[in-house]
Image (cartoon, rainbow, N blue to C red; front, side):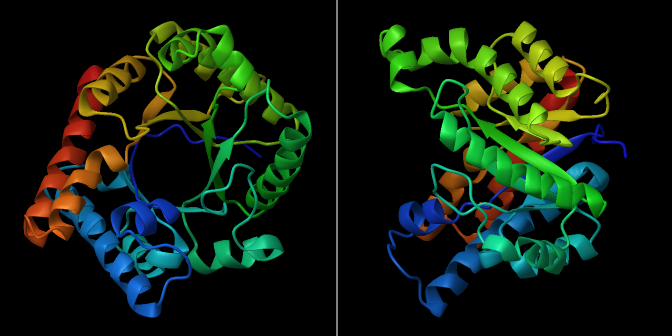
Length: 302
């Protein structure tokens, strides 16, 4: 079976759960039905923005949404019916260690929402806790085997947060870590996960400042005959300028097929809409314009 997805892929991710309820709404603990409905309604603002962007010229076959089942099951159904690429997360929100949101029942939930991609967010540092890395790899392999046995695509969001020791060696300078150490650790993490039987079709990775680092990531993702595997850049809630720099650098490297930029695209318009500073239509228009700008930037930089 061939692993990989190498067509252009421009994703607007809004599968945030804990950060939405806590940071955007200021809600903690169990949500009521009304609160759940309110979060689902504001996620529809983002979905409507993708629809507007597609109507304005973003190619539908390249446009994707990433949204969770809890607040976005209806959005996933609508998006699929409209021919958009869909992705849905399988991980429990806000956990340091990867585990399935729906435990051993994960397959039934994936089949229920039937996304183009099943996505996982994983914090994995090869220099971190070995036992935790092994536990995570075991679960991630289980998902990998299930997805590929059932003809489904696997999107792997790899975060490599620094260990305390790694950061101390660099004078607690996170920018130095991002530039000097993280790229090497990312390559190592991809190798370790592949060796553990985790086969991603698309690696969703943190932005890289140097094109040689982007090339190394593609080489890792595509090693040993995995030559159809794609890489996309995530936004990490950075400011516009930083995200632009990352996109421009990655787009010029073959194997980087697109991006998944969420909060940088939608956060401020949603905050303003919640505060009644702008209308719903204005929020939709701002998010759509921002998403379309990322697409144009990536396509030009290619």
